[in-house]
Image (cartoon, rainbow, N blue to C red; front, side, top):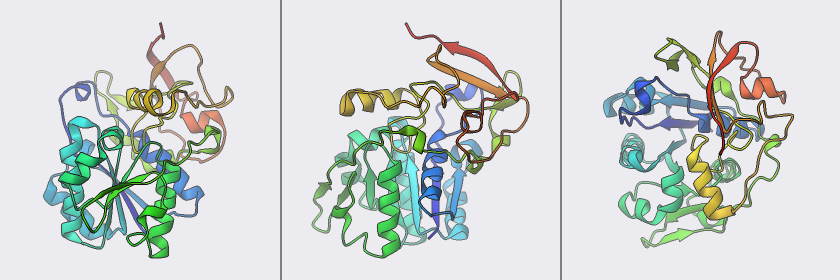
Length: 280
């Protein structure tokens, strides 16, 4: 069972002025999948590498994934939808999955526009996507999609179906991101020409948004769908004084997957904080 995650090649010219940024969603989903027994995972950051449709077509043909998962915020939704269409054109048997803040709220529109998308993951992605992968692995996902909580899909009659929500993961310390899935040499803070670590905080240490990086997307889902936060324990969190901190690395991060805060957050002696937004 080969799973391929792709970050869509969307460029706005905004945050990119300062550099390239590691997508946290990939590390969280990869870590959860590996803990669930699925280790054959490939990630392609089409945005950072600026990969064209033709380049992605070749990637899909080379990797030969059983499942392709992609994320999207609202500005990147059409890039993501087209990316999954390209995957289907390469191999119609590929199961195409979309997550993220936009798809979570706008799944009816997304599925109406993109019949080639087999499922939308709504809300938190880890448990939902693992259950989806298990169903695909068992060979009955397309026939029994309604049995997977937390997804939406378009059935054979063209009707949009939304399954019951997956309960949120209450103990976030049970989730160990696999930061080794990311090629850290590609993520650079341009003004200082140094590598970038991951944004972190006691609240946004991980986002409730499926397939989405931590930040405002998680805040939106939490406020609208859950009305509460799930946070890391104090032992896991590195800082409790700032809402968002951005860290630079003096050396490559450890890729060890263990429960220590320094390994999970990548915030150790090899990093230094360059600034924070203090909550008001």
